[in-house]
Length: 176
Ligand SMILES: NC(=O)N[C@@H](O)C(=O)O
Ligand code: NI
Image (cartoon, rainbow, N blue to C red):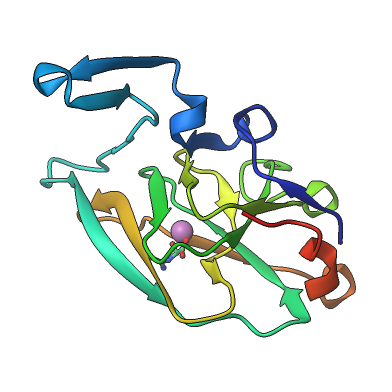
């Protein structure tokens, strides 16, 4: 599969890249001892009823994926965004697809991005994406997403004929 480096521009239709280099606004705080890279991503939380919903911070500990990796499903979170930030200085893969219609992804236009160890990603609410793809070793990610009631995870299994494979060679050209 074609793998591209993750950039804000390329990811714009799917959410935000959390990266100091993509900050629109940055300014000094704390008496000039700290730089704030301001408002890098939009946290979205929706409620299906009056239940209390909020955003929360978790840590996902992902096993290293084995390659070739088959892409046989995507998921989306219809009620909120989901952000990941790598905590172990390792790159990872991000897989997304546009919506084909209201209930399925456009698999023909699936996109695979190589994310560096200093880039986070924020999937906008309802964006079709693959579950966490950690590389090379067990890896922790800080995750910000919706905490609350209601179904917030739709999964879509591909027809066997549409399963795609990612080879390690597909992203061997990238480095931090
Ligand atoms: N299931 C779960 O919370 N993980 C996925 O949402 C994911 O994107 O990894
Ligand atoms: Ni998810």
